[in-house]
Length: 296
Image (cartoon, rainbow, N blue to C red):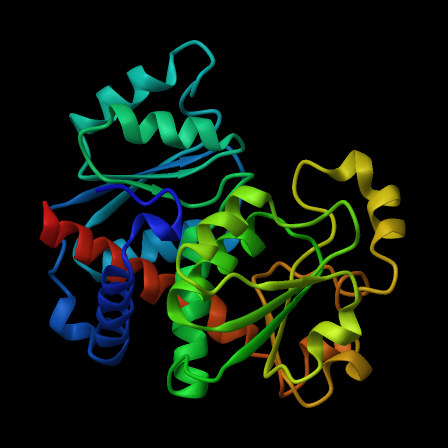
């Protein structure tokens, strides 16, 4: 089984992964040899602090091993077809993790690999972040029932996976984006299949009214640097400030561009659970890896 987006799991499977993640976090010694002798191949086209360290450290804590494969180490789609990379890696490793630009490359890896492929971020989706987000919300609020979240910012890859995760867990979600930056129709249709599609608006203040959590992400994502000035202008009024946040919980997948999508004092406030989210990347991924290992 592969995880290209969070709705590759059923709702019951999502619950099982989150339960496993919580168990590992609470009692890590029980799982310190859960992946003994197993190897994770980590393909990186995009750099990341949290993704690399959380996966690599997580594998070590589970008794396994991780191999970093950066853009200078392999030629994914350049000099070797993606399908050939997938076939070769399958002969060496037990899992493949891919952090790439094009979602189609992750899908092709999954199609041709004989081992589980985990999407660790594409331009379309970020399911590992959503697993960590859901684990954090469950810890913060004791579950998902009656939890209301407002997404304020870009309807980007992080937002799109979170839309699906929220739909699957019953979270009441409102997504506020500027015009032209909405979540795709495909993602909204997939969320509707769980009878819990988000409300959408172009008004951040309306979105946060009644919310327990405000979630934001960078306005200028990696690879969009040439659009920086235009995007910052388009997102005027969407910055999460102390006034917009109020007494609500702040979530952010990090890294934060302080002074752009969020103010420094908000990130540093007691309302922020961003460091819990960052830590939970490792626990959520460990839950996923061990759950996938059990299904082999």
